[in-house]
Image (tube, rainbow, N blue to C red; front, side, top):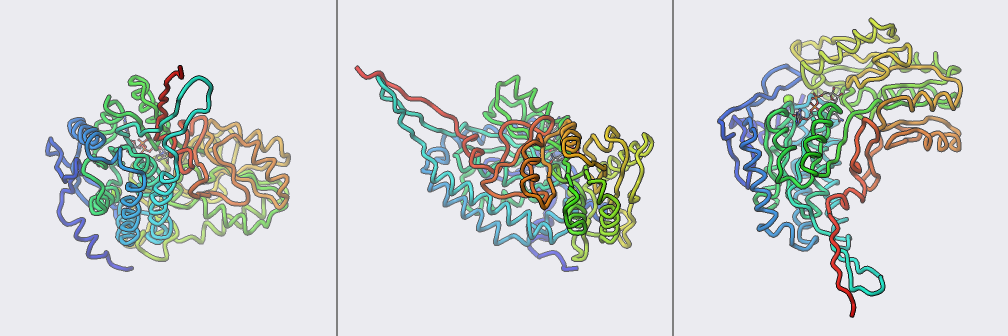
Length: 495
Ligand code: NAI
Ligand code: MG
């Protein structure tokens, strides 16, 4: 196991870690702190400033001032892009530190954070910085009788509340388009995983992002988060997390008539036809459902397997999952790290229990996993369940390494089963017959339909959900930049 970089040790050394407001590192006004844990060891990793409504107030005021006076909102997009590329350069330069911090705080395998989360986030800043340069801010309106144009201007202060499963990557998805458009931001990271966002703020400071443009308030959801969502100084809001909290955020924003983006959970299906390479698809889906210990909102957790290949498929998936190495995130051999918290482990266990009590069966037994040397960590074994399509484990998001397997034999019935979900984030179709795969992909009701793969992300390819999975336009697409610009019409009658 490679030791922590000196830079990471240094970052964690001066505790409690402070928040970043108006270009300064500050304690909470109340002086309170909270703890974030290393879920792999179950130990306290760092004490962090516990911000609340008062700190959110200071951060929003700083962001308002920066919007009006720092020049960020009014400088040419090109000048902002220079700074955002510098920030992306620093993310790349410190990628190893960021991957270590993310792995420690979330529990995820360090190699996965280094290969995906961190470089992907750096690229998100570059993508939106470049897109903003190419985006026309003034469009003349070709219309008789008026000299008229549309100007596209940033909104002002944008609020962001993030979850704990991909803290760093989601900061990129969320704030990069807002910043590239010229807005200023207040970020409330999840209380379980605030560290990479604080490190990000350090890099933003170094990159020359003006004071007050990026503010980070660490703290709890019902205090700091609720204060941010209901603050009247916020002009646009974005939330990623559970549908339950998403509703609260939407209510708060509704009261203030503030537009909101909601990226919520999912219960993604994989529809596997009988003409696939069974072993290869079973391996791919075993990988998908264990990615980030299953804490991925869009991953495939309902597997609809054609009855002709069902037994062979389950056999291969079972052996693949059983062979995966559960372990500490910094161990290079680890495939599956711990889940993020004891609360999350109890949630996963609770679902297994409720599912079984209401008639589901286990094809591969899951439950608590003991990892030698890390007995206090929050480890969970992968599991495969099966049973009726209305079982709680087939309907609700578990957010652990568990898939619910169901047989099907008819295309229409398969589609109907997929679409019976209350969610609508992402599904995949697996078939050698591309005509069929494309046909089915278009009939599945969700923000994303993937073919012969699951969990596909690329800059420029919009990602979002419908139904319980969210609303408000999604992320990662060119439209996301437009979401952070409001249109203003300027018109004069021609005499
Ligand atoms: P959560 O929705 O409570 O937490 C997400 C964020 O919302 C955190 O930053 C939290 O501090 C904040 N928050 C909580 N209550 C708030 C409130 N009243 N006002 C404003 N902000 C608030 O998610 P939780 O409880 O950690 O996880 C529960 C389940 O949610 C998971 O098991 C999973 O099913 C789902 N989830 C989905 C995610 C996704 O990527 N779509 C991410 C995280 C969780
Ligand atoms: Mg943590």
